[in-house]
Image 1 (tube, rainbow, N blue to C red):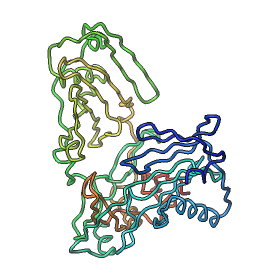
Image 2: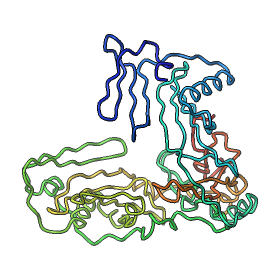
Image 3: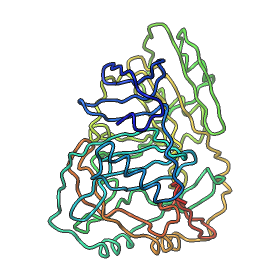
Image 4: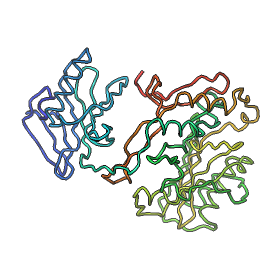
Length: 399
């Protein structure tokens, strides 16, 4: 099946652990496959054969050919995402009763614009469906979602640090029994909060504070929107006074000055456990500090400080550069929250979808998720202009 999509003839296969390499007579690499539990999970082609297509019919014929070669003819086309240099094609299983695509199953293809198959990856197809005892109608779920707070006032740096109305990401959708689903209700968000910071004083010399008497080097990097500090030490570190959080807060206070009082510690105590992630080495603790201005949290611009919990020495800082002075003179929106929400309510719909019961589960449950069927990009609302009411949608490559 590999040979079908390669120009030159495969004459040699070499397997190293779970990877099979394919070569020409002259040892030129042609492709490689990655095995998982004895089955192919990924194929990458280095010398792909071109199968040009100029019409949608020719494109569909090529997809059908790929499915036939890899014996995946039972899969159904879910999405074709058009990137600048290639297509990403998602072929999935379909749930039989409601004909819903089962995400994270089937086969993903990376296809060049000239019709070359560049990569194939396969996902699990062993799934089960937990059908609900009660399933409200799509129209009922839509009415429920329209009654919710869809938008929230925020500030976007990518358009010059202006107010916009963006989706309230805490709102997820509607359960099959009509209950509203919120992000904060999910197990991984249990106990999540923004915690006030302790009172600390800035230090006179940040470099001296960060090196803390170690035989270490300090590298500082700065871009347009980020400044970073990294400390490298070859010697065995000695513990210094204080505690990890206090050290991180002192560094933050020294960097941001009086704006420190607007920062909060982001806490997600149940995140790793709920996602099934085991942290084997908790020697280094990461603290994320979020800036909050007039109840608007810039959590996408958090400052992260990593501290050695045994020595209290700081290892690195990644600090998002925020123009605090701009916030004092931001132009107030001329469109009210109520008006922005009404715009979103006219556009919003719901779509019955499947979701894993937990991250590693093969059991899928049903939920109505927010959808914007009239979106020209097939994506959700990115933001609503706070003065004109113009709606901008997330770019997806579908335009």
